[in-house]
Length: 60
Image (tube, rainbow, N blue to C red; front, top):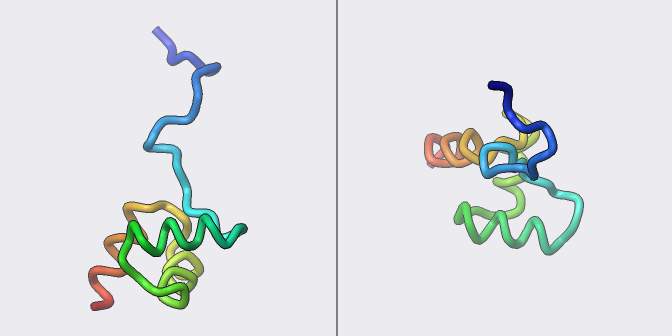
């Protein structure tokens, strides 16, 4: 059977957004990084949270 296309976004579909200050603060707290580190990671590899987390770990 095909997937239900009307369902809401799951965790696997969440992307990092730097549009609002509160979103940046939440991501910085969750990932344990500075705003500069978060911005650099998203610009370098995209907005997937798992990829950003791995990128930040490797950078340290």
